Image (cartoon, rainbow, N blue to C red):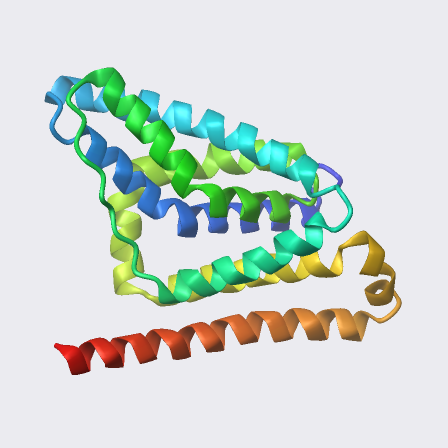
Amino acid sequence: MEFFSSGYLSALLSIIIIDLVLAGDNAIVIGLAARTLPKNQQKKVIIWGAFGAILIRILATLVVVWLLKIPGLLLIGGVLLVWIAFKLLVEDKNHDVKPSKSFWAAIKTIVIADALMGLDNVLAVAGAAHGDFSLVVIGLLVSVPIVVWGSTLILKWVDRYPIIITIGAGVLAFTASKMITGEKFIKGLFDDNPILKWGISALIVIGVILSGRIKKKKKENEMAKSA
């Protein structure tokens, strides 16, 4: 992909949106892990914890980008990403992170928690990067610091404008559709029939958003009845 072409910039924008939507909760982990430390240590923990998280995330994503080149795994990754997009719309995330008692313990908690919580993020970014390592690095370097230092603002926006989650799920679903239709052993079928390719992409995006919203509404109604 040509550096800073329209395709490159659209993929980079997709990665940043994915990071902001999926990694917002990860930023809360940093605050929870550092909340009982002295004020003079909290900022250092956030900086070093974020640095460690970014490094692990970049390495993990680059590995997944490489793995997705193995025949069949792009299709499997696309299907998994459809499920991740659906879960984004219907699941309520809980943050059960105990505060750390020391500087290094807090950093370890942040890095480990981010690595475990960021698996969906890694797959989504790897799929959106289309095999371009520079997209992975630039996308994460731009978005992760925004998430870390702007987590409170991001979460307020999500609470106030739920459409942000829907847009994020749509971007994930579209990325999933591109992974599925880009799988080598079925790619020729879609290259020869662009109407089928875009039809399947539209079906996946609309299907994820509609099913997710229906499931979310059903859960809310069940909770209201049991309250």
